Every structure is written in C-alpha cells, then in structure tokens.
Length: 177
Image (cartoon, rainbow, N blue to C red; front, top):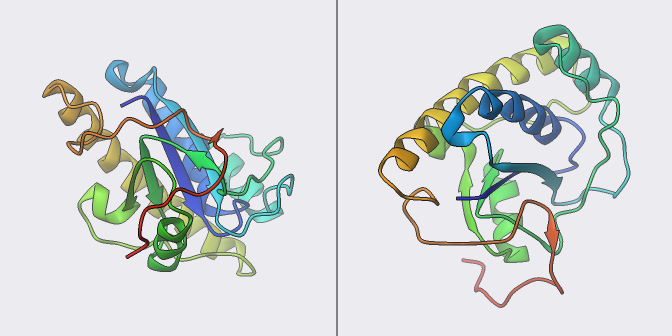
C-alpha cells in the first residue's frame, strides 16, 4: 500500500485532524513512514480552511498545526485505501467511485465506530472527536503494520491506486452499491 485518504463531508473538521494525526503516527512507525497521506471531503469547497475549533483542538490536544490546511473535494481523487468517517460519507464516496478500497475508519480499526461530525458544535465536542480519531487511527496503524508484516500492501484486497489526492479524469464506472 502506498497511499491513504481520510474523507469526511467538508474536509474542514474530522479528516484534516485525521490526516495530520496519522502523518505523525505513521512517521513514528518505520513500516508506515513512506505512506502518502491525504484528506478530502465529499461536499468540500476547494480552498476552505479548517474550522477554528478544529485548528484549536488539534493544536491543544496534539500540538498539530492545521492553520495551513485547505479543503479538497474528493471528486477525481484516488488512493489505495480511502477511510471514511461515517455511513453517509461512505455512501457518497462509493457514488463518486474513486479507485481504491473504501472502508469506514471504525470498521477498518476493528471497532465499528462512526466519527460524528462536530461541525457547529462546541469545542468540547471537537475535543471528543479528536480523541476518538486518535484511538481509531492508532488501531488502524496497528492493522496496517500487521498487514505490512504479512506482505500485503493494501489491507488484503489487492488494489493499487494512485497517491492520495491524485486527480483522475472523473468518477469511475463502478456501481455504487
């Protein structure tokens, strides 16, 4: 596996935190250090900044800087593994039919959890979301390391997409179940 893309709705709350935090986690684990890591949103407006609360919580909880993050729309992006935050986002990602394996982050991490959207909520809701993301991302990293040790590059599915956020000509032709 070469690339992972974290996807939420607007790419201004959950997925930017997930991207930044997973970059740090992956950098500390040699089997994951070379992964290309990105984020996007199914309804994102390209160029939007992360919300003030996402920036604040990422800084206070993890000493991560989201101030330069700019939202990207998922349309035309691909990655080997696309991890989504909730069922609606998963459905929307599948409708866009990107190349790569699409899975709910909580399912991939083995908990089945969804990550609720904190947009418009209090800073404490953002804080709880960030802590949940940390827990799920650590579990996902553990799984990726196990898979790398077994020689599977894609979590066992055999897909080889482009790097995270690589633009293609448009959505594929896969049926969006």
